Amino acid sequence: MKVSGLAGANDGAMLEFLKLPITGIVSDIEPEEMAGFKEQLEAKLMEELNHFIEGMPKAELHVHVEGTLEPELKFQLAQRNNLDLPYETVDAMRAAYDFDDLPSFLKIYYEGMGVLVEEQDFYDLTYAYLEKAHSQNVIYAELFFDPQAHTTRGISYDTVINGIRRAQDDAEEKLGIKTQLIMCFLRDMSAESAMIALKQSLPYKGWIVGVGLDSDERGNPPIKFKAVFALAKAEGYLLTMHCDVDQENSTTHIWQALNDINVDRIDHGVNSLEDEVLCNEIIKRKLALTVCPISNGYVTDSMKAQEIKRMLDKGMRVTVNSDDPAYFPGYMSENLIATQTSVGLSKSEVVQLMTNAFEGSWLPAKEKSALLEKLEAYAA
Ligand code: ADE
Ligand code: ZN
Image 1 (cartoon, protein in one colour):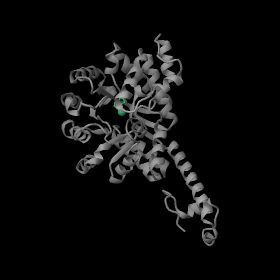
Image 2 (tube, helix red, strand yellow; image 1 turned 90 degrees about the vertical axis):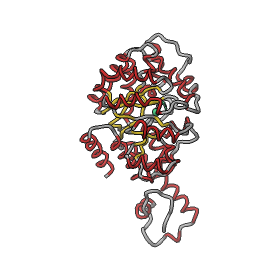
Image 3 (cartoon, rainbow, N blue to C red; image 1 turned 90 degrees about the horizontal axis):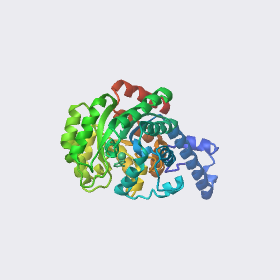
Image 4 (spheres, rainbow, N blue to C red; image 1 turned 135 degrees about the horizontal axis):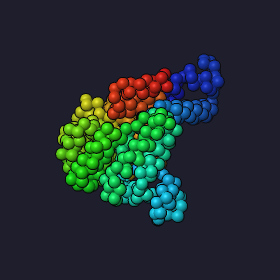
């Protein structure tokens, strides 16, 4: 007997679950009964895989710390800083999160961070995310932050980074979660402004592993920041940048990220699938792609789960991440489960996604191996 369509199942395990003898009686089962068994089995396998995902040691490589600002904390910080919010309740605020593309999301994202004023606010924001990530067995995270979104509001660079760093240190000590920081430039601001942010970062070089590029991609190609990224590289930073999904000139931008910027990673980058030569180049350079399915589901026409599966099949170093989980509801576990459910990933494909994340992380080789060993031990 063979029941098809059950990713990762084998007949022996299935019959055991169905409490049937391994041979002999299969022909006595009515087709409707068989369909019911199959449904039960699929539900059971799915539940087991979801548990496996929840318990799996995880790395997150694409999360904007400002995008983890949950409405409840937004209200608390507004009160603490004597600021008015245009909503009466958390539910009303959530209901106003009405975006369907990147610019409409970014408007709400930048408005939201107005409540971040004091160093303690940045601490509370970061620590809350790290507690949440820890609860989902994230053992390593690389956090983006957007200094220009704060310095342009009169908040000093030091205030921002000191608050975030103190939370990183405390979370490592108390929760055992290891993190590194990536400073993003806002691509819809000028290259001169990015250069100022880069210079402001230099006294904190020891706290920042790399630089990225985010915000609105339309009309703001990677090449606009060529000199900024060249200087960042010379200063020892690793380089990544958003190649957001379904943008104008998506593949041209990814080629620029490779050839003009010489990135060490690509954030999103799903449209690379449109160009076979580009995919092969990304594979050759072993570049990780940090895809964010639930976020994609909000700002594009789908979660791009099929594309994640295709990237895995091609041997690309694709990873799954949460992006802005307070706005695109779902942290690491939810993103992985949503992807798995959508395309029926097998357990080994789920483990491959996470292996890709640890391998593509910006940790020193020894630390990377130690974390990979934890994942291997869990999956064994
Ligand atoms: N800034 C915060 N989240 C972003 C995203 N998903 N894309 C581009 N810029 C961002
Ligand atoms: Zn992002």
